[in-house]
Image (cartoon, rainbow, N blue to C red; front, side, top):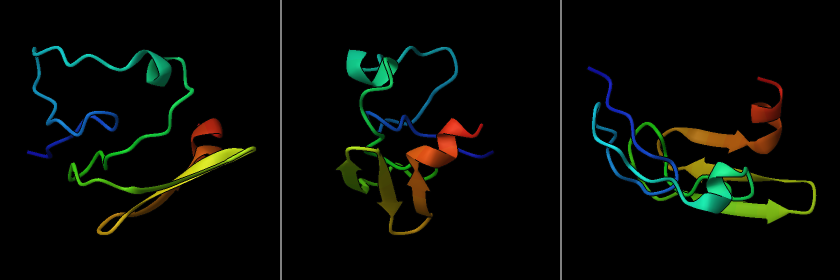
Length: 69
């Protein structure tokens, strides 16, 4: 089973258990602070045109990558 973590709270996602997402994150105004794969705190850099976040184990994710999805 592949565990997933909330990228805004760092808590493990448990099916059927509600984990509140901060309002700013729900509006897309806040970058993720925790890795979705391992729950580790990430290094986050915000700039006027976007953001990037780096997990020591899973690499970098950028806001531009999410916009293309």
